[in-house]
Amino acid sequence: MADLTTVLEATGALAGVGGLGYAKGHAPRVYWSLVGMPVTMGRFTWTYGTTMDVCGLTVQPSKLRAFMVRNVARREVQPVPPKVRRLRGASTGLVASLRLPAGLETSDIAAATERLRHAWGVHSVTVAETKPGVVELRMTGYDVLRRVKMPRRRKASGPMVVPVALREDGSVFVRDYRQVPHSLTLGATLSGKSMYQRNLVSKLAKLPVGLVGIDCKRGVEHSTYAPRLSALATTPEDASQVLDALVEEMEKRFDLLSAYGVSDLWALPEDVRPVPLVLLVDEVAELFLTTAKKEEERRDRMVMQMVRLGQLARAIGIYLEVCGQRFGSELGKGATTLRAQLTGRVVHRVNDKQTAEMGLNDISPEAVAAATSIAANRPGVAVAGDSSGGWSRIRTAETTPAQAAAICREYAHLVPDLPYLAPFRPVMPAEYEPTDAPSLIKPQPITE
Image (tube, rainbow, N blue to C red; front, side, top):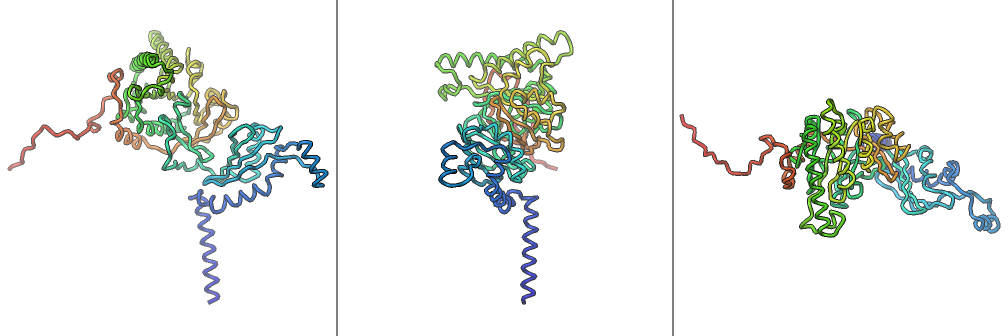
C-alpha cells in the first residue's frame, strides 16, 4: 500500500510538472498566474533597493532625513530609491507605481528599463508617467506579442475609437480619431501592413462612418472592402476626382459649422451632424509618381488636396489613414508637408533605416532602433507612436482577406447615403446583392 501511495504521489508530481511545462509554452497566461507572478513579485520585493542602487536610480536623502537616520536610528545613511506606492499583478505582468524622489525624472527610469528587465527576469519593462512625480513601471512576464489574442469584451470609450492591435505590455492599442485624427503607416512587403489595415477596416465597418478607399494598384487591396465602401478609386484619375469631391464637401461642412457658431463637427446637434469619413490611402507613392510630363499637373493637384485635408479636415470629421512602403521628400513636392500633418505613426518592418526615420525620428530615436530590429518572421509587429513622444511595440491579430470581406458584407447596410460620392461607389458583384426582394418570375412546373 505504501509503495502504491509513493507511485501515485510521484506520478502526480510528474503530471504537475508536465502540466506546468505545457502551460509555459501553450498557455503562458496560466503559467504566469501560477508560477511566474509569485516568483517575480518576490524577486522584485527582495531586490528592489539594491537593483535601483546599482542601476543608478537612487539619490542622496534630504539633510533632515540624513540627520534623523544618523542620530536617531543610529544607522548609516543610504541613497534613497523611488518609493513603491503600489504593486499589483496582472494577467500579463506586474505594475508598480513609483513616487520619484527629488532629483529623478521619468526619463531616468526609462533609460534603465533594459537593465531592470534583466535584473528582475521579465520579458519587457515600460514606463508611463501618470502624474508629476509618479510613474508606472509596467513589467511584462512573457512575450505577449507571440500569439496575439485581443480581449473579447471591451467597452467603447468614444464614438471614433477602435481597437486595432495589442501592445507589448498587454494593453490594447486603439485608434482614437478624435485625439489622433490622421495617421501614417509604413512597412515593407510582407511586413503585416495590409493585415493592420484589414484589422482597422474590420472595426471601422461596424461603426456609422463613411469609408473612402484610394488604391491605385487597381484596387487589389481595397476591393475586399467594396461592400462597405462609400467610394473606391483604383486609378490616379479617379483618385483626383474623389479628392476634389472630399475637399468640396469639406468646404460645405465648414459653412455648416459657421452657421451654428461651432468649431468642431461633434459640437453640432446630432440631427444635423454629417457622417464622419475615413479616407484610406493604400500605397501613397502611387499618387506622387508620374510617367509623363502631362501627369504632373494632376499629381500636384492631388497632393495639394490631400495637404488641405490633412490641415483642415479634422474639425469637420474627415480623417486620413495613409499607408506606404516609403514616404519621404524623394517622392516630390508636398510629400514632407503632408507627412507633417499625419500625427499618428505606425512603422512595421522596413528595408532601410531611413524609412524608419521618416516615420519615427521626430518621435523618439529609441523608436527608430526598435523598428529596425523587427524580425522578418514576425509579421504584424510594428512600432506605434505619435507626436507626444510616446511609443510602444504592437502586433495585430491575424485577419485573413476572407474574414475582412465577410465583415464588410455583414455591415454593408451601414454605408451612408452620400450623393457627392455616389459616382465613385464600387459596383457590387451579383453575389453581394441583397436577395430579400420577392422574385418577379413565376416558376413553371416541370412536365414530361
